[in-house]
Image 1: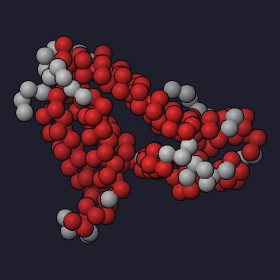
Image 2: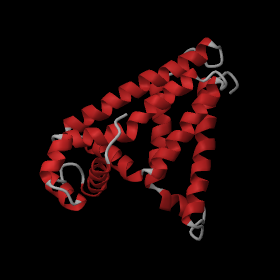
Image 3: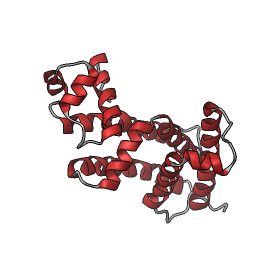
Length: 210
């Protein structure tokens, strides 16, 4: 992953906030420059274009996922299911703690108006699917996981469940009469509920124990 300077990081964070608020098409480079307190030429120097800035944002927010799975693949102390459970918790934590970025991700996919963004998203999906498939294959070789696993559908189950929960937190709170629960406590509760729910589903999908 790229190590950004403080100024580059400031531009990325500002772009993230504006893309989440106004959408990619509704945000100009001038908007980002004004909000970040930098010159337009500085954004061009660092990132070349708004499209490349979006790509850099995706690299910054999602690039570490591949590194995380590669590290897990090399870990001989954890079993295959333990590794999958780590990825589940990582995903939940990441989405719940970086809601602005994932709002951009989900909205742009739903709108499907910008081929460049869809290409970026699809490229990351392919990279992530490929390396997570290696983790699943390792579990299959060790006869811990079933032979026929639709990895794409399995991951869609996790991504969709977490995304729907994220966009309907107020509904979940109302449904369980948790209106008076402090926000931090509620966030911890939701993460725990999601973790248990998805791990149960993945165990049924992957292992012979279900």
